[in-house]
Length: 234
Image (cartoon, rainbow, N blue to C red; front, side, top):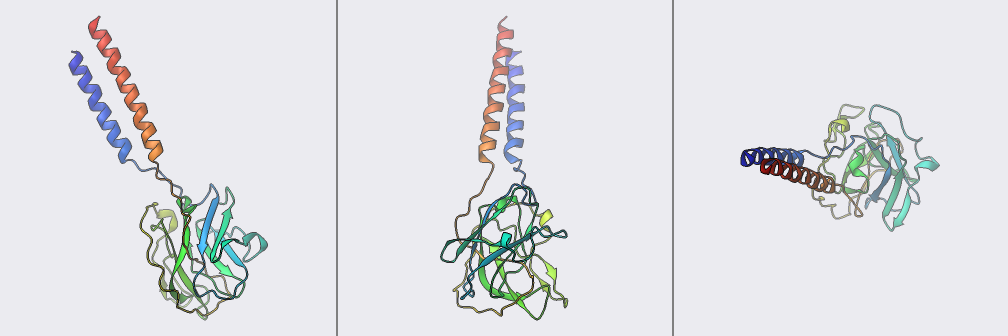
């Protein structure tokens, strides 16, 4: 009887652990917790003095007005800038721009992008808002499930590759090559949406949570086995 009960407990333990390990750690499709993101300035940005970070909710409103004081990024080192997203912002799109009219294309993002860096592959495309202007495609170094948003420009050109950011599940991937840095870009001035990258990326994989869950289940199962064995002895 004891052996049968123990087998049932162990079977339940294996099933529970399999489900626990297989279950992904959920991540918000929008940035709501706040935190820092980084931009590796595109090679085409030569004589700028100020970098801005524009954030908004896809299909919703802007966090702050375009290139206002609250959108100013902080210089970390030559070519690397950071921006602190306030907690509770609820945003999932980002554009980086500078004070001489250059900007990046619309880049999707989620909570797992906090700590990650945006970089350029030196790809210049049509500005989705104004086809007479241009912008630069940018990508996340680590969280490659997010990227340039798929949409049509003002004249019907298909741009980008990433679907609705609310439908994206965070994944981790290797950074793609950032190119040789020799391309040039036409300056723009209108709000268009995107950015570039290089280092300082940090990610949360949920490993700690899974280990803690495993330990808790194992302890509970061993305790159950002990109780069953004691009752069998009595």
